[in-house]
Amino acid sequence: MFAVHALVRVDCTRFVALPTLYATFPSASRLALKAAAYSRVTIFASTCGRANVSKRIAIIQGHPDASGSHFCNALADAYAAGARGEGHEVRMLDVARMDFPLLRTQEEFRNQAPCEAIRDAQETIRWADHLLFCYPLWHGTLPALLKGFLEQTFREGFAMRVDSFGHGSKQLLKGKSARVVVTMGMPTLMYRLYFGAHGLKSLERSILTFSGIGPIRESLIGRVDARSTESRGRWLIRMQNLGRQAR
Image (cartoon, rainbow, N blue to C red; front, side, top):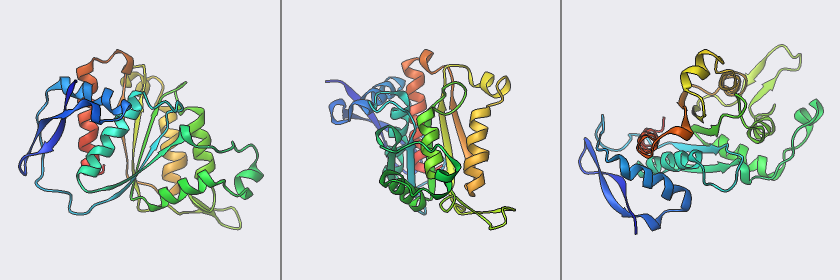
């Protein structure tokens, strides 16, 4: 049986690796933790003790494959484990496992009542103080299923309210922060400089900021298919630490 390492606090400033049974984790997390085990990293925390205020965190898993076997799943699992270990509440929204129709007309966007899956997602987002979006970059932007989910969820009346004259809107999701985690095949520098990170900017500006969400932080992971086991393990540990901080 393969022994993996879960990070635990040993005093107020230091975290070390503790052997844990590999078989006790779900399949996606086992791959994640196996990678983390190879990294043999000891982490030094910058602050002492748990977070002063626990937060409510909604994790939106945007990978369109429901198998749960991708690096995006492992990253979200690591973030959730870190957050729960620090006393934060976590709810998961797995877009690939939801059943919802695509919006096809302006009339549907404005007036069609959301289906049960979307209503539940809206309630989770409304409940949360902090949102984590995790998805792979496809054709420079969001996978189509995630985009369809956002169109259904971030609608007028939930995310914003346009005044009767159409001259302005009220942001309805103020007070929430977000982190966007994107995996991609290309180097992140190429995505930012050559492609202008257009898909990421569209999400941040046209949906999240427009709804009042902020600040918005980013974690971009490039050349994901070419990364070594050790490199993936370091990213998983980084995500676990971000989860602890609810950032």
